[in-house]
Amino acid sequence: MTPDGPKERYAAVVADGAFRAVGPAAQVERDHPHLTPVRLPGHVLMPGFVDAHHHLTQSFGAALAFGEPSEIFRRVWVPLEGALDEESAYVAAKLAALESLRGGFTTVADAGTRASVDVDVVARATRDAGIRCVLGLVCNDADDANGGGDDDRGGGDGTTDPASMSADVLARAEKHLARYEGEELVHPSLAISVPEAATAKTLRATARLAAEAGAVVQIHVNEHLAGVERSLVRHGLRPLEYLREVGALGPQLLAAHATLVTPAELTLLADTGAAVSYNPVASAWKGNAVAPATTMAERGIRFGLGTDGTRGDGFRLVEAAEFAQRLTYGLATGDSSCGAGWTWLEHGGPGGADAVGLGALTGRIAAGAAADFLLVDASGPEMRPSWDLPWELVRRGNRDQITAVFVAGRLRMFQGRPVGWDGPALVRRAAELGREVVERAGVKRVHRTSTDARARSAAR
Image (cartoon, rainbow, N blue to C red; front, top):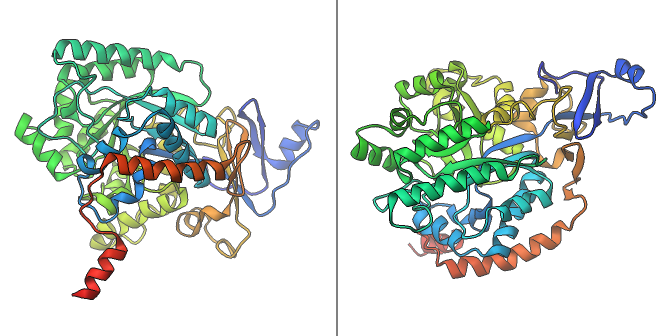
């Protein structure tokens, strides 16, 4: 699956973690007579999926969001992550990484953790799992008692002097951006929960620091109606408009969700080169709206696809991306194509890599790119007979068709199991710790479990 579309009888040479040659198999064999070809009949070699928005340390509570009202941060995510210690944070992050690898993701962008542990715990978990990670460091420095987004993390390190808090946050941000220099799999990023969780000074400064470092700043923007209204009350501006006013809107911004955007805000995104994480499953599970991704594609707005930690399954994500557009916008306008299939593969891979700041490194099968790729078995009933491979991968592809996952040229997952470490043992430990953490956190749910809801319905 090349940048120009699917090619039959093609070959790739992988060495030192990257693609060294990609082209017609006969030519590649002639140019590399010392190599023994590995022939893969019935398989697609395609770029790994990029999850442009994840919360790796929330994996113990992923199923707690089912049936819940949209803004669940105070009842679920704040107490859950607050109850994590070093071991449980590591296990939660590695569990999420395992699920992502099984689902065909070779890169995940973590939007930062509110757990009171060194963020390197998350880096170590993803490194040990073998997945590429854009690692966010939360840079909040504002007292956000009046509200926050779905992922509000409160203010800074607990200091009360605003100037001191901002200085500390920015010092930690600079240190974080330098900390992973030269790392193969960990790429530093900055994160602010929502615009009101940081001062205008810090919003500007993190934008500058990230731009200078070639990194991204991840901010939840225009996700929920309550968040948009808080911004209007506080600033007289919608969140994206406020970021533009304070000097934080630009190519370094990765705006998570952006579901509630006006035509004027779409113009802001297009004109400034900011990127968006389109999270269709999150919209269905706990959102207020679906981002107008087909319009974004038409306007040339940069965007990737994100799970928001809902489920680490690349094929189901690209299907949800197309499906949500079809139901929300396509049916009303008679658009039966909604991106023609290829759009969602493009933004699930290379577009996502670009959105998270790794477009020059990964996301494509091409000479010089990192060898982050999947081998997908296309010989089964889902793909035979085959008429239009990109469409078929979007609508009929499945996680169980992924034979192998490679990251940086190394085999990380084979037939659904990690290579070089004990996945089942991790899952068993996660099951133990997850129950302890959720009980300790005191998570408060609004929606009953499905079993309780059924019994209540029967009683009525």
